[in-house]
Image (cartoon, rainbow, N blue to C red; front, side, top):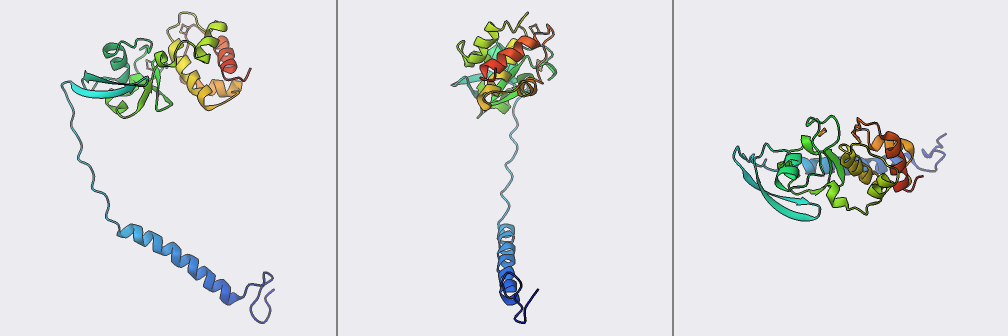
Length: 202
Ligand code: FES
Ligand code: FES
């Protein structure tokens, strides 16, 4: 309830309250106006590449490599056909199985659905880049988490990304991390156990 000087139960007078609100609103209005007055940055003109081969420098497993590739070539094709990194598999070649999974700046991507030109300036990590001593690879061996092995590099890369970002993953975390990978041999129980152990969660 306000007293005769316009003070509420907080002791704040109506005049002080209105003055305070005016300051905040004024500040709030000034910032967008200043932003609006800034000229919009000029849009960069699109660069046309191809159809012939162009020179690209990619950072793969910590090393810069320069390749001559056609701009239509996918990252999976460039890794396998130009850089001899055949650990990355191409199975469906249309984003449906995860055999081609690699990391791009720490995030898993389907390399069959990524153009090599779009990997320029980013860090590509393939299964070869993890190294044989990687805990996920060691756990796959221990838990016999493969049969034909064709899907395995993709699962290993997805698992390595999981254990890098999450300690002690739960079974649900593991399932979510590999939900974009398919194993036709049905080795899921071994993969679950391997990834939980590699992340310290088992
Ligand atoms: S080969 Fe890329 S998702 Fe199947
Ligand atoms: S081990 Fe054969 S497809 Fe997974």
